[in-house]
Image (cartoon, rainbow, N blue to C red; front, side, top):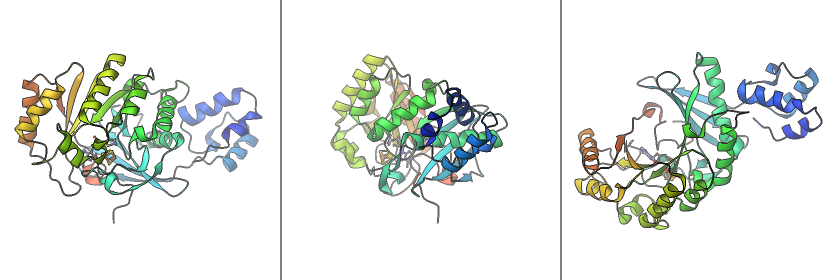
Length: 336
Ligand code: SAH
Ligand code: SF4
């Protein structure tokens, strides 16, 4: 898909064409200009030649378990990104969106981080992922819709803040996708500059922080970028975000066997998480490299300690591991 020339082409057209084109593209989710029957034939042909709508993607369906679908999208410069459709009960489809090709931050537990980094995505490339699933559901979805968007795919959204927020505003716009900001969540490794900027946006998007450790030294050994952002500074920034927005913040905590899942870890985590509007989401670790996932009873025991200490805690359901589409498994590569 390439819409760079769209505005130039529409400039010479009557004003109402913008609305017609927007409706066809972003609400009817046409895959070809031929379907845009409200437009005159000559304009359709010009658009067909100069603004290709095809999204070059390959999909992988999970045969077992929840019906997640992964798509590898090849961008115009041949870079490949991944996006996942998590199909839950009626109309509760969630789309997981990537913000970069790879990730420069190299967290020790994450397949995306291990795979290196090429570049950030443009807002159009971010939006294109959602459009791809809208088109997919139009043909395969029996009237299903996208319920939620999570910016938890490849990359760190706050290292691509401008394009990320431009995409959010576009997806939120009533004249295009009209997806409520309250149905969107963004996860950051803890880039405080981004958290501060988001607090000033007047958007009701949900914020999640990848915490994964209750101690600076452990956090730094898992996530190199934590050397730049101490837990103290990170939590202080989150506190100002909460004061400013009045919104809840979700702290993601991976459960990695014998690394961060002891009783001592749970107690320390409880002590730093016991604050109004903080909540913890425990994520069963999807094995990608040297680490192993915590046992289920360990996760349950960990949750109980947090709850007994007054910290609201949930355990994340995992989807898509059979197709390498679960959290932390997105590499933007085909399986050999
Ligand atoms: N870069 C951002 C957003 C993308 S990652 C961030 O790190 O927050 C989305 C979530 O998946 C993060 O919480 C990340 O820590 C988690 N994750 C990474 N590797 C994982 C793995 N192997 N198993 C489960 N979750 C993982
Ligand atoms: Fe990047 Fe997030 Fe993976 Fe860390 S966990 S390497 S920040 S995508």
